[in-house]
Amino acid sequence: MILQQPSTHLEGNQLLADFANLPPKPPRSKLEPHRDLIRELRRGGRTYREVAQLFQERLGLYVAPSTLHSFVKVRAKHRKRTQFELPPLELAVAESPALDRVAALKAKPAVRSSKPTRFVFRENEPLILTSNGGEQ
Image (cartoon, rainbow, N blue to C red; front, side, top):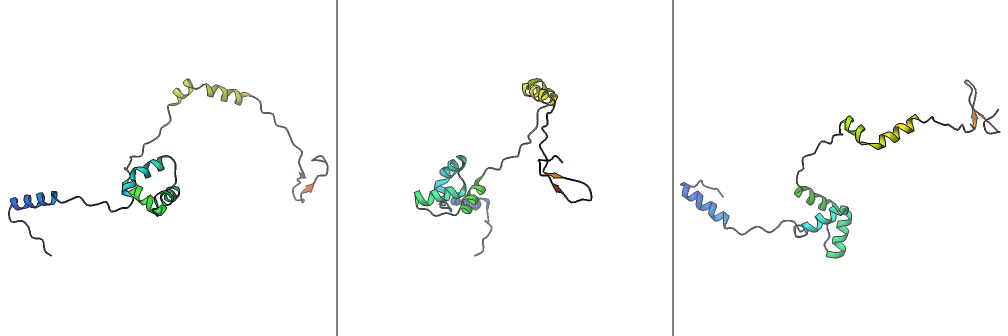
């Protein structure tokens, strides 16, 4: 079939009008009628596997989790990734009482309890297991 160029601008407009009057095409995906349900389930934290299982149990509609993923991915709004920034250090210091607590903990002397060692290490000798909790 060869399409011919319309001979006049008027014929081109007629063709556009004819195409505009065509009935809308039915959705190609069996998931399209359930679009809102899928969106709400996903927003509620359901995995694609769980959504597929719910569809099979409740609607009698078998759909693979990968099909659900593709359906959502194709119809997803492309969101521009935002750059997260930390607030300036001056603001963080001025507004945070937690930093005072952290500074107090850092100033506190560290108390280390020495627990008994189970082995004695001497260079060029095998490890020695102590019998009395590290004292030899």
